[in-house]
Image (cartoon, rainbow, N blue to C red; front, side):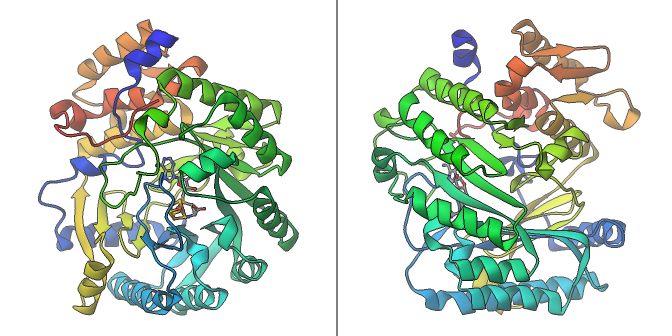
Length: 453
Ligand SMILES: C[S@@+](CC[C@H](N)C(=O)[O-])C[C@H]1O[C@@H](n2cnc3c(N)ncnc32)[C@H](O)[C@@H]1O
Ligand code: SF4
């Protein structure tokens, strides 16, 4: 196993999209193409399944030095209202393009820290969204919160607005690790938001943990997980630390590279975590997630309806996801479009009356087939090329990569399908890479991706 880890621990995408962002069309999608595919997707899905909204709320009061998210650090809460006004302006521009009133099945507030915003402003945002949209049947709204910056009032207000799921960033409870990543928070703060969520009525509370952080040891992880399972969150994200210090503004500088656990040590932390989660009654979902069998993510996995998008795994799938806010990515299934990443550029584009997208990708037929294979592998650990719509000209080339993985005991190849073995789960990003035709065409010259393991 040690040798396999060395062999397969290479830089690779996390496949929250295919093609992955660095491989989107060089010229970017034209506004016409984006609008045309948006309308097509909307027509196909607005009546039955409804659409999803991802709203990026980028502000945080304090910088965590491991963080790879798009965020802006400030203590000035006067930024809230202008930002919400801009997001609502963007939304109204979309609604004009879409003609019919959207039925919203899912909303996810991501960040940054959505709970940086006051209850009053969160209410203003959601009311503004529904001034020109309807709630779809069985809608599901969720948000991310920071335990140090989430009040009972915010939890209540969001619940009253229809939110029933939340996730809190925990990362690690060890004082030495917390200090190194500049993220100090107490067990009591996490306990408070978790218990408050439960008593208010949230039906799914998730905790984010990371393995591979500076100074983590098996002993410290054991303690962090012990505290986590004591609170019995419905879901746990157990992320592999993505060390991407070359991303501008990341601030991953509170520790040295030599403070990080090495390949095999990091893997041992994952294996230990997995065992402790199993012992506590959790089931592993796709890559880096664990859920209690009572949670909808588990049900989605069982019924093979688990989906993966820019937010990671979700238990519901919609064809169209519109991303609002700075840096958000929209997905019409046939195309992707990303908003300006800098907040001033985002504002300037909206003030000029333009949708603030600056790059994107129109998927070819081949991209669509590869995308489905990668989704199948990431969500169900298997895929099949039996039906004509799943066939690819490049299959012989793909199979040659897969055969090597079969010989390494990662997966089994049958006549017209492959199944990743349980022991191969840690290599699913590598299995997806076999299908990634864009990556085969041109290997990145600079470092773009975090390590796969
Ligand atoms: C937007 S943050 C969560 C909400 C809130 N800002 C907080 O920190 O509590 C989303 C999650 O992404 C994960 N994350 C951020 N940077 C990461 C990195 N470099 N590697 C792995 N996971 C990361 C963290 O677990 C974090 O909780
Ligand atoms: S981890 Fe959360 S709170 Fe920390 S900087 Fe990133 S988005 Fe902000």
